[in-house]
Length: 169
Image (cartoon, rainbow, N blue to C red; front, top):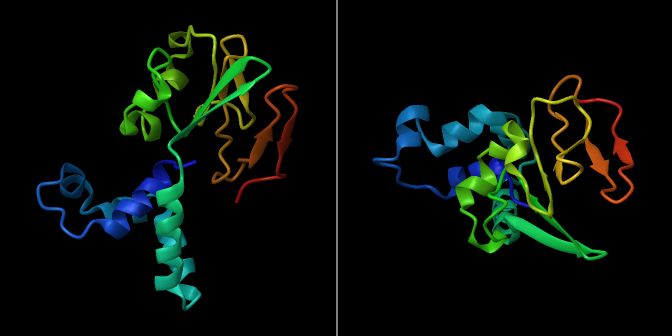
């Protein structure tokens, strides 16, 4: 699924002209925004391969195919997946891209989710284990893999069994 870092990379590589762009004004450019949010390491590693242009082109094609959200039904129960946030009262297909990639309302205010569906998204600010909130209807999966004590995590949403790496970077 596409997240905000994939979106930052995509914009950084695709934006040729950024005049009048507020982010460009604040951060210099979409490329500067990406580089300052983890992209510098990625950019360095891409360059080391000597195949930077091919890798970048392939990555851009992959990102173009990444969905912004997914909806799955299991045993009659709806599960919504997205990177950052959603409005639980609005069908997924009608959600704003900015909300799906950048907002954090549900993570900061879990009580906003009163619907029946289970919503799975990323959110920092909690322990580095998946968090089940709102009687299990809101699952926060960002476990800080980029942090020193963070983890890469996977959770079985039906059994709530969690699988984690031994440590972050």
